[in-house]
Length: 386
Ligand code: IPM
Ligand code: MG
Image (cartoon, rainbow, N blue to C red; front, side, top):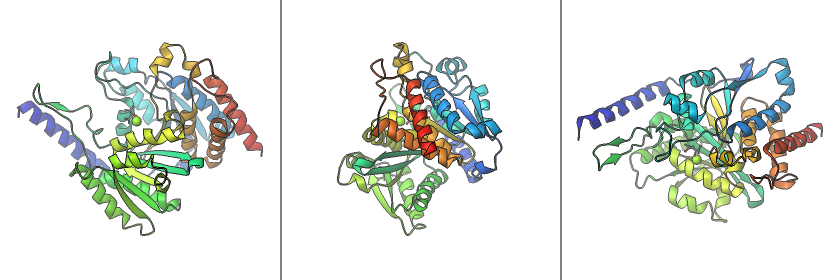
């Protein structure tokens, strides 16, 4: 093994050990009810991001009219998280943008373009992944509900570890040998598994399903599974169910079995894959919101990408804001605006499932993003007065 590879690996290990030291400090969760004002950062991202984020902000502004008037809640626009700026700074999140993000308590974020091998952008890390790490947003919470199919799942995806922890720091040892790394820590596993069990306990759920590939990835996934087994003993009223990722992807489409899943917890990459599959039952990734929760900060986003092709073809005005609106509803619940969150969730169920007076097709055969947001707002209005 060459010296450079040894040095790179040793730096990697050092960085992860330092992260563990930070996690051990166990920061207290933010108490939003004690904040005055609550600063909500609005970060448009790029591609269709700015259009759908603005639409979601408008709907939130409608629901939060009185809190905005009294100054209890403030919106703060975050400028500059675009692929052009990130490429120019050669940073996943330019320093000035990170500073703006950290000056908010909670963030609504539009999709951001992720450079990949072979495209024209420099090899910078995904802004999503960087933000999750920088703000230590360890829990990626993604609910999927399809009442008519009996589906009511909530995924707790670990959000800072696995192959994502050092995904841009793999080592080309020689011309022929490339190695990536996956990371599992005790502290990182405990906090996400505990969050899943706490959610289950608080919502009268009877089962938590842990998903790994511990039969093959023995050291890291084995650790995650062992910790799940240990923590489950603290919750005797909840059954721990243990599946491998391959068969889990199959069981989600098994009509008889899938209804049994309730709360699911898993390492990062399995959660990435499984939540896209799960969202498909609900109508696709365009319909699902995603919460990224840490102790100090939280960020809410659509689970889909920035659709640069829609922008290139001039179709961004037809982009579907449903996923951002779902994210906005989760954000409202997280800061304690439960009534507003419930109204928005009900309105979205009406507008995207039961009534569908306006339909988004992504092109001029359907309504625009703004027309759809108005439709959601009108529906919220009718629900408010009932
Ligand atoms: C998601 C996305 C991201 C991820 C991408 C854009 C890096 O797929 O939020 O699920 O892999 O986490
Ligand atoms: Mg994904």
